[in-house]
Length: 179
Image (cartoon, rainbow, N blue to C red; front, side, top):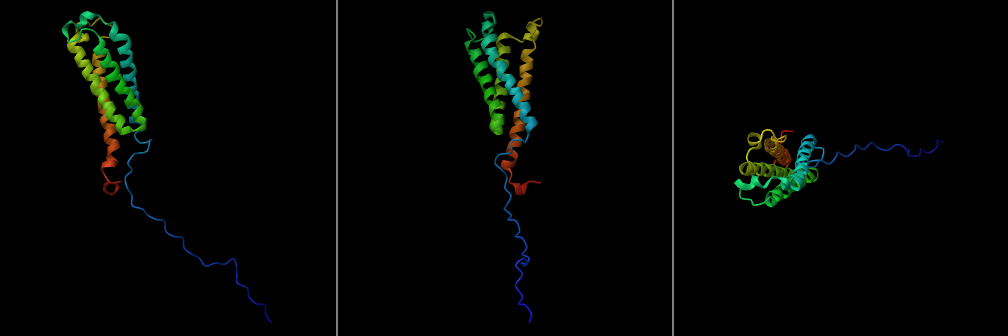
């Protein structure tokens, strides 16, 4: 007689793997940190430069300026200009530098604010003290007013670019994007 056949323990019927679950694609609320890295680093460097120079200027430069510069303006001393430069301009730029890495959209908005603040500060300075490049062209740093107005403009432009890029995916659902 023949031996009884035993079922083959190693042979199991082929079962196809389950298809991967597909979830609807949604836009992330926050872009990964590596997004817009060059833009964020450039903007952070510029606002950090602005913060350092504005705070240093408020502490060491503005208080040493001659009082006769104030004759054309509303200030009796340099307290208000020093506070405006150090706290409003320098403080907002310092906050922007920190936020650009943590919350790029908020950092971009604060950077825009600091760019506007330095432009306003310089325009008020020109109205009160005069345009140094024209009034005192022999001074070694006569070009600083124009430089900081231009720096403020660049910070505003980069801040707007960063803010718009961080808002793009939030405002437009993924199924509407062309990617």
